[in-house]
Image (cartoon, rainbow, N blue to C red; front, side, top):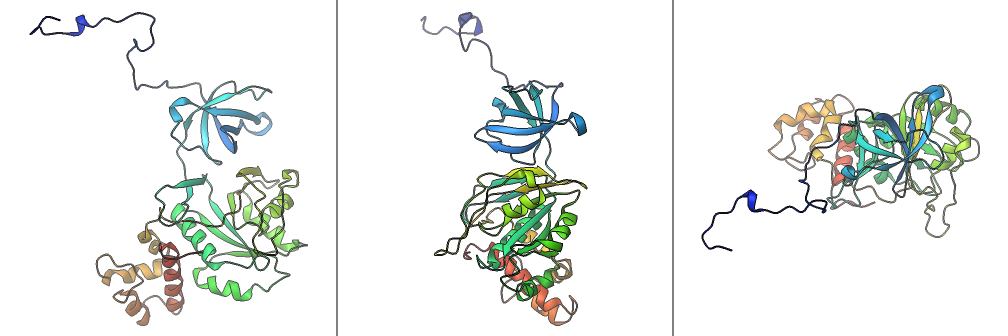
Length: 339
């Protein structure tokens, strides 16, 4: 090398036909020929999707494109496919894009975990399934699911099972101020409860969430008999159910249509991703009273202006019970709370 010489690009030798000689680019193919699909299941890196509509609808197996390596693809996603989309045995398509999501239901492992876990996408209704007995109902879990539903922009529906083992009135009274719609079923004969549930699910994309053993899979099998979801018993010692569903799956409902997404039973529902300020938005009758709150008010402290607002009748005759419900949900988000 000659000292003091200035080098330029003409001095760089590029060996042809060797890996790395071609300049890298961030440009990605447009995939203008991609077809739209709906993700109905995820299994060990393979995605079960539906392509087409009506008589042309067909199941296709797909994998994730390399450019989506760091992107989570979940049940409910609308995606774009290229490659072999025939659905023939042994064929494999490739997911190259995830379409914009209308809603995203998330949870974290606990209230201090910064990592969000996307459960499902594009659902518009969260069905919170809880047993009235065997296992015992857990109001904190229900509260957390309500917060997650509100945060995701989904409509909540409280579904109480095993009403033949315990009366639902006392449990429902706790949620009356929130105005959450509810349905009730029994253990052995769903009866009118199942018909009401079908009506509530019709034409919607609904997610069933709840502890193991509360009867989610049993309900799904009643709604979609060919689903054949595994069911289990509650442990007599721990009072907890055994995990029978190991992954989320979307199932199409018979006429008048709609989709139900069954999810594995959960024992915790972390809300680290939820901004507590977004919870008050779902209490418009109380939100107006926060104007007098001190800066950074948690709405669950001595200086909160909501107490005086409610005492003056600002939120109407149910103001006190509504405020108590709001604060219960805020405490559900509090890292100090536990299920």
